Length: 266
Image 1 (cartoon, rainbow, N blue to C red):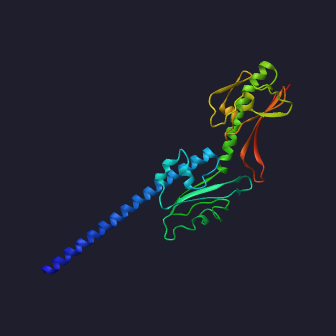
Image 2 (cartoon, rainbow, N blue to C red):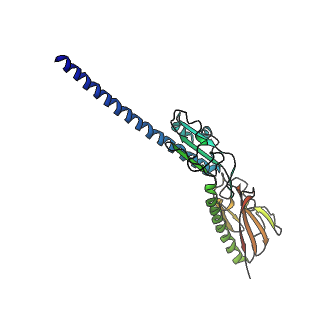
Image 3 (cartoon, one colour):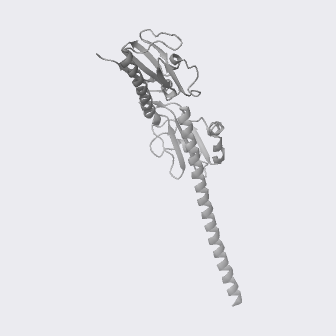
């Protein structure tokens, strides 16, 4: 009787210990999954910010965390994270780049992950569209996703500047054609606005307002959304044009020119 009682007690204790171990393992796994998702989200946010600033994704996670302003992401790296960037892709409209980061805990080490595609055919480096595998935490960025917005932003900037020039024409009945340094624009000639206002720095170091022919030009007028000088083309006293060259190309390899003309009729 006593032996049976002891056996039952030990059996019950074993069952309790097994249940505790299962609950502990389950809780540990849940905590690990939560940490993985949080760290992957922070890395993804960093990749997005890097791409917005540089116009391209980082070539690697090592480059990302070594870049000034992104060093804090080193603490979000873990042993399961992977990253890959494509070469130049072509979707029939744009030439663009794709990058993806992912965390997939699998027995095979997820070595073939980039060649898998849950939303189409082909791998990360050649597919028209690519999605990570189910059961993983992943993020994808494609430079083409920003092209339309960037073009629209630059058109808006140029319209602001054209309004200044339109006000100038209203009072002078002619558009400005002589730079601060004395250079006079010939018919059809184009010069960068920073040159015309006498600013010799870059977009990154530009601050304040610069005056040309009584007109105030801020840095958003002098440089485009990609950080390059905006061109001012003088056609005649009634017709000028602003132009910027985007750092990306159409499918046939033509660089995108964002231009805004101002032609006074009558």
